[in-house]
Length: 113
Image (cartoon, rainbow, N blue to C red):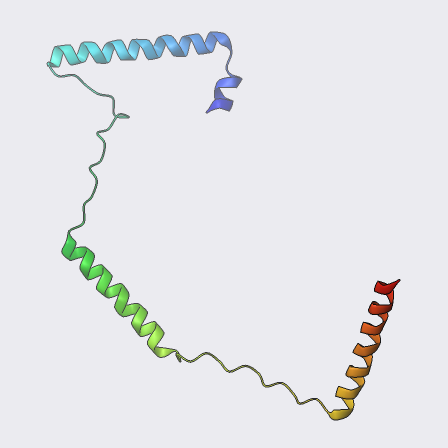
């Protein structure tokens, strides 16, 4: 709508404003003639808030709980077991131990400098 207004000339905008004022004055005059104030269709009465009864809320809650119980009941409740790690051979353990001793010795030597 703002792009439409920006493309109009000043003269066209003035004409639109005068037409709108004429429409409003005619609506007021019509309201006086009919004896009741007329409201434009754009200004509809605000909708009333829907209030749910406690019984309806309880039924919905029970249904949701039943659905969740059904969904959770079909799955196994136990967590899946972790994949077992392979055992380390004695040779691999010795190799790793030697490597770590070298690393820590190097760090200790750097620290003492």
